[in-house]
Length: 211
Image 1 (cartoon, one colour):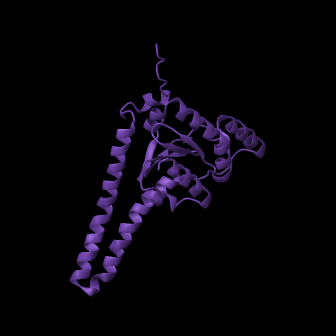
Image 2 (cartoon, rainbow, N blue to C red; image 1 turned 180 degrees about the horizontal axis):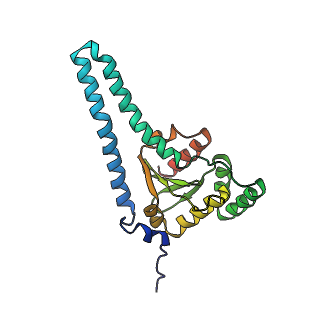
C-alpha cells in the first residue's frame, strides 16, 4: 500500500484555508492582477478626464498618475520584503555551523546560489521556489507568488531558519503554500525591481526554469 502523504502540523492552525494547489494559486494570481488593475485604471481614467477638461487640472492629473504608480509599487515592495535579509543575531561561529548544515541539504548549484544571493533554490511540483530566512518566492509560469512564513525562534542563525523552511517545503509543498501568508502575486519584473542586485540573480535563475 502507498504511504499516506505527510501533512505539515501547522496546516491545522489555518483550517479555514483550502489546501493550496496549482489551480488555486493560479486563481489567486488572477485575483491579484484584477486588484492591481482596479487600483490603476480609475486613477489613469481620472487623469485622462481631468487633462481633457482643463489644462489647469494637469497637476491634479499628474497626482492621479503618481497614485496609479505608487500603490502597485508598494504591493510589489511588500512582496520583495519577504526575502529581505534579516539582521544577524547570532555569532559568526553559529552562522558557519548553520551554513554547513544547510549545505548538506542542497546540491552544489544551490549552495553556490545561496552564497551569492542568500536564497536557496528548490524545484517543486507547484513551480520553482526561492527560500529565504522569513519567506519564499514561488515562480510558476510567468508569475511570482511571494509568501511570508517564518520559524518561531528569532535566535536561530539565518541558515538554520532557511533549513527549517526548506525541510517544511520538502515535507508538504502544498501545506507550506497553505500555511504561508501571500504578500504579493504578479509579474516577476515588479518584484525584481525592488530586490537587491544579488537576489535578482536568484529570481532570474528561477524564472529560467519555468521557460
